[in-house]
Image (cartoon, rainbow, N blue to C red; front, side, top):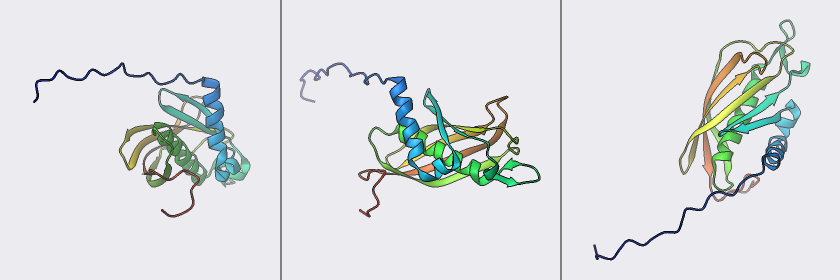
Length: 167
């Protein structure tokens, strides 16, 4: 200890205000950037309080069993994976490539025929290399839970999300 007074720091800078319409447009573009998301018809719904929501419309081509007309679990898995990935990406301070390490899904009930399914996810912990995310899939009308998930995503810093080359 030298006895010198502590160096004063300037005021913490506030993050720049983000135009909600511009953010929604950008997030819709991110969701549609992935060809599989587009093929399934996924669309961005909202981002409120760090929780991002994506919709999967009901579509006959996504039905797993024609007798029950219930959406296939694989389509709901893809929805939850995409939503978790977007939630993790929103938590990053700078762009980085993300990949799913683990996605544990508990299916609670079959999705109701003719109804869309929404997934809402939140990245609750971000380390240097791993993002931890929670997600729930539900019907927007009535809020019935279809599935819940916990996921971990690897964060590859120094590589852009579109980079295909090995480091």
